[in-house]
Image 1 (cartoon, rainbow, N blue to C red):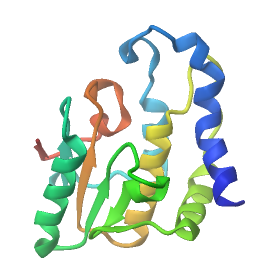
Image 2 (cartoon, rainbow, N blue to C red; image 1 turned 90 degrees about the vertical axis):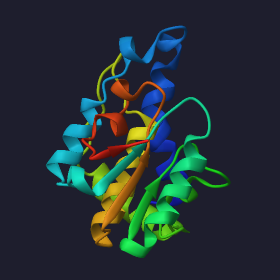
Image 3 (cartoon, one colour; image 1 turned 30 degrees about the vertical axis):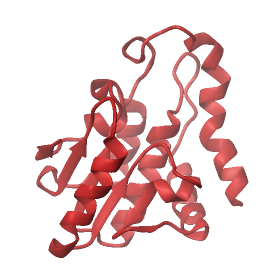
Length: 168
């Protein structure tokens, strides 16, 4: 497995059903429980009292980065933002340091082994897969606190469905 092949697999399921989704709302087409069930099987969902979720319509990534930076004195902080800034690996960080491509591939392979591609119209959300990769990495690195940027439609994305003690 290489980095580009992993990215192709992350987006493949979504791209296959994208024409079916055009003009439809997330609440009508997205099933976050597909990814969340995998997270539960792999024991990747952190305790709610260790999670801060950030949502809104503008500035979520900036606020999430500021919150993560502010929490660093209290332990190792894992951050997930979306979309990436420059490269897909920089959407996942521990204490401000982005994930390496090698770790990305290793974590992807661990979660991919547990995945069954759903049949249309269900699909694997790219955001959800990146979240799984990040949570796998955070677990391996014994992260203490988690900052997760969620989408505007929090009820309909994977990050929004993870219980959290604090929301911004």
